[in-house]
Length: 120
Length: 120
Length: 120
Image (tube, rainbow over all chains, first blue to last red):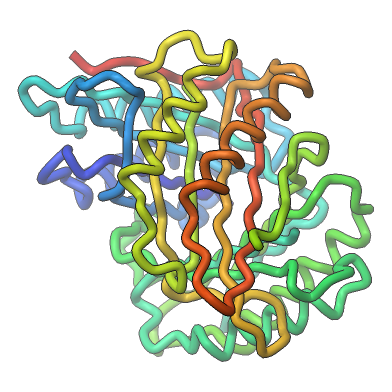
């Protein structure tokens, strides 16, 4: 069930999305919270229309959001956020003169109403 | 106020988005929770950059997220998720050899801070 | 840390995204809740595949979602939603014959698991 979405600003050119996708899924699946590797669904979204702050500086961002069914401990959530941050730290381009902000957010999904199935 | 977003991986070619959009809105509006049909705002997002799990299998996903003002009962949320799942079950392509995962999530939106208006 | 995402339906042509981005960041940064202007990361997402309600009417939407670390007072959240709504009210196109819906949602992000850093 984990849904992972990574957004980034398109002033991070040549983001190695394929490599990062594989590394992210490997890192998340290595968590004891993930019982079936097939459940981890990750996507990258590149933003062409964005603005960071108000100062005339060169800034970029990469932001990951992991959505999990509610019930994980705070420690498990911190561990997962740390795994994701580590991968993004390694794969995110750092263009000269650009301040790159990295953030990772964990979201609890409502468990009783969640629907999950495999279509035959 | 319901906001419905359906994401899918682009290895589900020829997704009938127009038909699914109409069917989704009809299904959601038929819920007693929706008082004004005009409130239901649905969008499709197709993902070209995605990865599911870590095994070398052909996999696809379709994931719906419905955001509602907080206060609905668990039963009402389950009913809405079921309505959405039923439409997606009917409209989602099932390419040969591809395992398609379907999921539906219901999200409570913070009611006191929600702004809603119609621009004249 | 505030993450602001503005979605709109693409029957609002010539949306002045650049101007709106600057105005949104200025408005959000003017809030006493935002300590560092560089933290405000805003993006626009234009939707080509959407459906509003079930009636055969010309309808459009613009929807903003602001994600903040949990802990803000209800009043602070209402104030932020109001600032965002005011900017969108000013910048959103209003094509003749199209009913435009505006909404703003504030989301609390889980604080203990949030990761934030600047890449060197």
